[in-house]
Length: 134
Image 1 (spheres, rainbow, N blue to C red):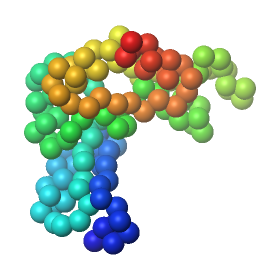
Image 2 (cartoon, one colour):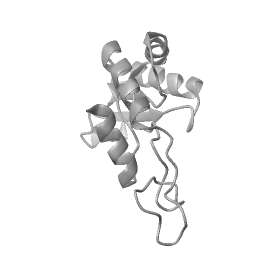
Image 3 (tube, rainbow, N blue to C red):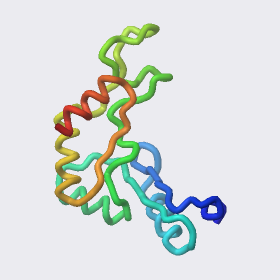
């Protein structure tokens, strides 16, 4: 109600197996659908490769397999994936998805009519996403 009073018409809930659980995500979307106020769009951040995975995402009430689907981590923890090593750490971070897996995810989402999206912080992670969607 407070969000609506501020003129907010919609919000996104970004859930996923790395950050929440399916039951909480689906319950929030169901509760939001029963109440007046801003529309809540659910994004479930899980990699999919086929129609079976897409069907499961839809059953949760999500409009996409996106949001916080991690390609890498964060700068503060030195897990964002970089092309060059960190100046204060002897590594380039962590890559969770490569361009081939990103491409497969985007293809599966597109074929299923779901929005695809990613969390990419480091320059190498952003490069992987760009290469994956080409």
